[in-house]
Every structure is written in structure tokens, then in C-alpha cells.
Length: 151
Length: 133
Ligand SMILES: Cc1cc2nc3c(=O)[nH]c(=O)nc-3n(C[C@H](O)[C@H](O)[C@H](O)COP(=O)(O)O)c2cc1C
Image (cartoon, rainbow over all chains, first blue to last red; front, side):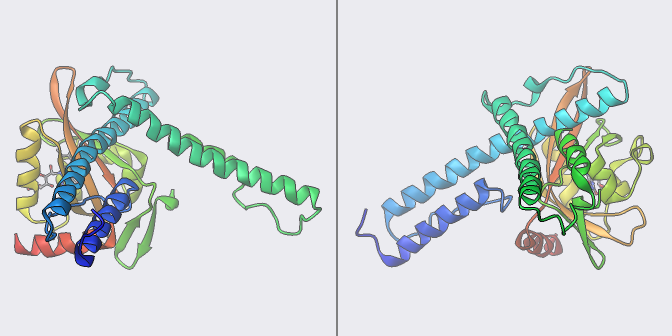
């Protein structure tokens, strides 16, 4: 493993970076081709490509579930309460769980932003530093955004 | 909801958190569009519902891309790809990374599309690819 050539090492490193970008949603697509010189490194690249493909399936299913959720909220808002089956678009068992996690994470990000702003406000009050006004669009905006994110 | 996109000349660039959703019936008639979709495409939801989805089609998009989309989703599979759409005035456009998937609604086949922001590199590759189609 540790006697791989420098060029193969760089190919592998690049592939890992691509996977990382893909998982962090910095890119939407990734394709890792096993074009290293060493058969072992190619085997690893092949695995990485397969994992990325599996991850994409789960992510696609999550997007669709998020879309289903958005539609359910829309229908609920317009008074048309229909049943949408999440099961119909779950490609594997973890789909719904992943989706919930997505929304939870999104919500948490917004909450963290909100809390850090409140904290910031408090620390300015306690440091008697209220020369800079609070953000013009205020907390009510953040709460609305939080709500929107949730939809 | 201007935080959903920024403007660069004729292009509207989605923000990282933009999530555009629309649902069509089996013929591609829009039955639902979410707020992000409406705000980027510059339509009110009432203006979209009942219209065919090609209402946002940009002339730069090759026919082959949509043939591939329909061929894929009609067989029950998920289609993913990059799409350039136009806004209601036709003067602006925006690129999306779309995931389209069939669902069953009250015994009928419908389709949902969920869209996220593509990267600049992905847009470049899509432009190059679509030129060859
Ligand atoms: C769920 C779903 C979403 C679609 N979204 C778009 C879209 O955003 N932009 C677009 O041009 N076509 C979209 N289409 C494809 C259109 O139905 C249509 O095939 C395409 O605009 C080409 O139309 P035309 O050949 O009638 O000009 C979508 C189709 C489905 C099923």
C-alpha cells in the first residue's frame, strides 16, 4: 500500500477529494475512473466510484422526499390534504431517515445562526456596545426564514 | 425571497440553499411549484399550474436532453441532469441541477423535479455537451 508511485498516490488523493466534494454537495456529479497504473489502486478507485454511485441513489431519493414534503406542505396550505406516500419514493430503507436528517440539519443550521445572532445581541448589550444597530431585517426575519426552510 | 438567487447580467445564480420543486401530471402539465421555483422563474404559482412545463424551456436546451429525461422517467427511473431555464420575461435564464422522478398520486403517475445549484464547472461541461447534441 505504501509503495505506490507518486502519480498513483495523487490520482487516489484526487479521487478522495472528489468524493468529499460530492458528499459535501460542493458538486452534484462525480465520476471516478480507475486509471491508475497499479491494479490495487485501481481496485480502490473502483470501490470509491461504487460508493459514490450508491450515495447518489440515496441522495436522489432524499431530494425527491424533500420535494414530496414541500408538496405536502403546499397542499396542506391550500387546504387540499392529500396523502403522499414517502414509501413510493424511498429507494432504500434509510431514505426517510436520511431525509429527516437533512431537514433536521437545515433547521439546526438556521437555529444556530439565529442563536449566534441572539448571543451576539446579548454580548453587545452586556458590553454596552449598541452603537451598531441590529440587523435591519431583525430576528423576525430569521424566524420567518426558519419557517420557510422548514416548508 | 431575493436571497434565493443573485443576478449576474442575464443569468440568475441559485444560492446554495435554493431548492426548486415542481410536480407535473403524466403529460408534463404543472400541478405544483414551490416558492423558490416561482421566485426564480418570476411567476406566481397560479400562472404555472395547468401550464405545460416547457413554459420555462430555454431555446438553448437541446431536444435530446428532454427526450432522455422523458425516456428515463417513463420507465420508472430517476433522471438527473443540468437544465437551463428562462424566466417569465424571457430576458434572463438560470441553470439548475435537476433530479426528476415518477411518483403515484391517487393511482395516477405524476413526476416531481427537485433542483439544486450546479457549480460553474458543471455548467461549463453541460454547455459543451449540449452543443454537441
Ligand atoms: C417533472 C418535470 C419537470 C420538468 N422540468 C423542466 C424544466 O425545468 N425546464 C424545461 O425546459 N423542461 C422541463 N421538463 C420537460 C418538459 O416537459 C418538456 O419536455 C421540455 O420543456 C421540452 O418541451 P417541448 O419539446 O415541448 O418544447 C420537465 C418535465 C418533467 C416531467
